[in-house]
Structures are given as structure tokens and as C-alpha cells.
Length: 223
Image (cartoon, rainbow, N blue to C red; front, side, top):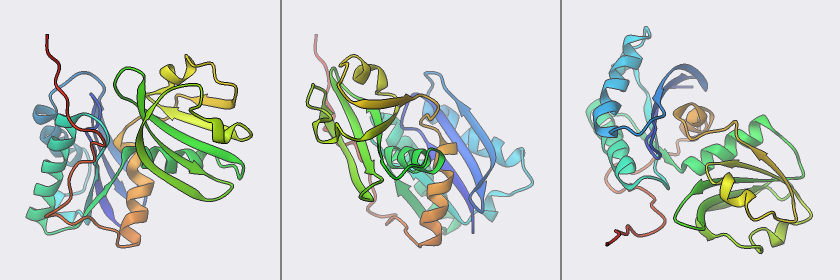
């Protein structure tokens, strides 16, 4: 059991959640196009101002390392590393897509479901991670080009799908048993259960070597 600061800067949102023993204590987030650099550290200060906890009480910091916004991921990880170095506490690092899957199967449990967490990428692409409840198989996040064969291997499964990539997937009108769920979002509050699990199993990142998981190389556009 631990006091953990959870940070998510993978999207346009800046999100910070304080959790203890796997329960959310306080959440501060803004879901607008903002500068993560200008919002993140004030949010962290504010979250401790709103509680009886001190930053020195932290047992660990958890960070969503991607995929997502290149700039956002770098800023979030830099702040998380700085806190861990300063406080001499461990860093917990995992994909936001994995956190979404963990929450989805916790809240919407079924032995026969395929869980899919999807994040928008470029054009007709998404980033996605899968968890097959019937085989207890986790497929790590990867970039996927959307087409009619997207879910061919799972046509006989009940599919639970969440994330920011849903609109693109809906446009395919796939012949599959899909339940689209928009209740789960990329937020530090949805990291709480998974970060506690990592802490209890001593699953920590190497502060010196952990990097954002972009999954695809950075690309610039030209006129």
C-alpha cells in the first residue's frame, strides 16, 4: 500500500491524481489545449495544498509513458523523474493504453470479452492495445492501420472498445460484436489501480534509462 502521485500528459489534457492504498484521494486536470510545461508543476503543488498530505510523504510517482503527444510525454516524464530523484522514491511507468485496459476489465468484467483501448494517431491509423479475457492474453500497444480486416481474428468475440480512437473505428462499420464505451478517458485517475499493483509487485522503472514510448518516429509536415 502506498501514497502515489499519478501523472498523465499523453494527450492535450494535463492530469494529476493522488492515490493511497489504490484509492483516489484527489484529482486535478484540465481537458483543454494547454501547455503541459506551465500547468503540470502548479497542478502538483495544488493537489497537495488540497489535501493533508505532503509531497515528502510520497512512496512513488507513476507516469503514463505513451503513446501520445511527443511534447507532453517528454514533459511529464521529466517532471516525474525529477520528483523521484529529489525524493529518492521509485518511478512507476506504463502505457496509458494498458491503464485503460486494466480499468475496463476491472469495471466491465467478463470472461468472454476482448478489450481494446484505442488512441488517435495519423489519418486512418490508431494506437491500440488488446486484452483477451478468455485466454488471459495481453497484446502490447502498437500502431495499427485501420481497414476492414482490423478485427478479423476476433469476429466471434464480444468486443469492448474504449479510448479516443473510437470515431475512426465506427466509420469502418465493421461486421463484429462491438460495444463502444466512451466513459473511460486518458486521465491520471484511471492510472490509480494499475500504479498500486505495480508498487505492490515492486515493478519499477529504471530512472536512468526509461523513455517515452512513442511507438512511431516523430514526423514533421512541410508546406
